[in-house]
Image (cartoon, rainbow, N blue to C red; front, side, top):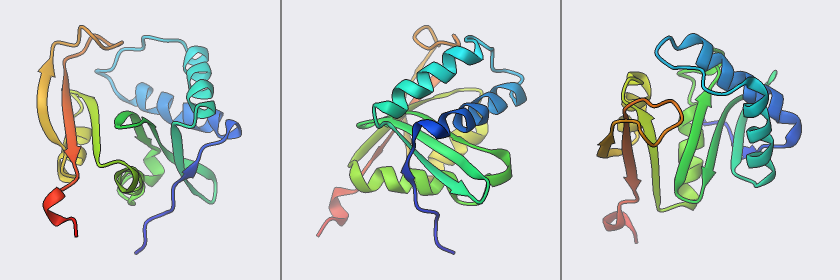
Amino acid sequence: MSLPQPVPARLWHVPQMTAILWGFIHRTSWLPRVRPYRTDLHVMMQITRAGWVRIVRDWRGPVAFIARDGAMVHALYVHPRAQRCGMGRALLEDAKRVQPRLELFVAEANLPARAFYGAHDFAEVARSDGANNDEGLPDIRMIWQQDRSAAP
């Protein structure tokens, strides 16, 4: 099975991407709500305009997105109807094709995300008490580095 092809997000995708984000927030009991929906909608518009966001779609529209500025992955979310279908993998593989190194922070409590990134060769490099993230939750810095020994 081939992976879906990520494409740049457009402003008209912002409401659906924000709904994916907020759906995750509402389904995740340990995650505090720290911003109003309107603020997240505005931020999504800004990062989409800046070209940071790529999406994958199904017949109903965007089902997953990644927000990345250079090597820093700020967000990767997949709608529940598309989880375990390769959407997150497609977004990561797309980012790995253009970036030899990726880094991100994942909440320590987000065990599924930690397992997902670990399965995609991200390694834990540091932990923090959450003092520097919006939610104030302990997090883990993870890095993926292209295997230079495999290069031709």
